[in-house]
Amino acid sequence: MSRVPHAPAHDGEFEFWRNHAQISLQPVAAPSILGLFGFAAATFVVAANLAGWYGDTGTPRFLFPFAAFTGGLAQFLAGMWAYRARDGLATAMHGIWGAFWLAYGVLFLLVAVGALTPPDPFVPLGYWFIALAAITWSGAFAALAENIAVALVLATLAAGATCQAVGQIAGISGWRTAGAYIFIASAVIAWYTATAMMLESTYRRVILPVGKRGAPNRPGQEPRQVIQFTAGEPGIKVGQ
Image (tube, rainbow, N blue to C red; front, top):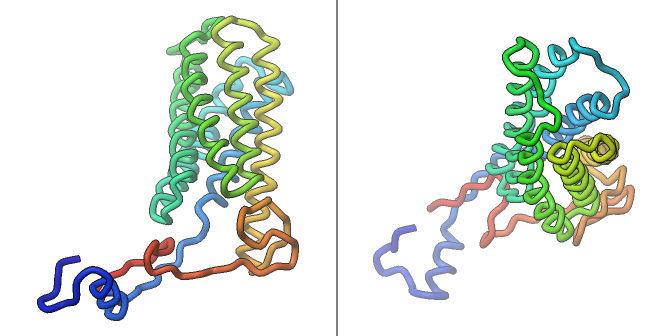
């Protein structure tokens, strides 16, 4: 904001802008509802294949579009909307995993058309998972300050990525299978968390607890929606 002539300085200036600000509310739904549902769906379908529940030589033709659009595009868009909602954690996690699923979809498109035959061990894919595991462990630690359910989603996701990294680089099928089952657990927790967020949004009260820090968390409680001038709120534009 530029200084208005003769406006008070320091604390007085803050009071001046506070009393002359116009706040335009642009409601933003919780982007993580879409992001977590997209993640849960794609992760479950792909992890079930990795765990050996289904699949044959034609499976990549069906995996790549679902992974790229459900886990990739939907989640990446959720990450960008989380940026608009000033949610740094959701921006980072949905953004990085959305980008991964887009890349994973392209990878299996190449497999589906015969342009690539996955090697065993698949060392480059293992290094993908090293990077993802490191970032996701950081996100899990950060989520502990906000939401226990999201922290569990990210912790299991990071553990699954860690197992996949070891299994792909070392060529150990047991580690890959363990990682797949941990991914399935992460998908189930993500589905629960997204469902809880969606129900809270539609019923305007807590239905399923998710362990939110410093906010109503017991079933039946109404969520607090406090507008803060200094920090702003998701979707708020402050101007003269």
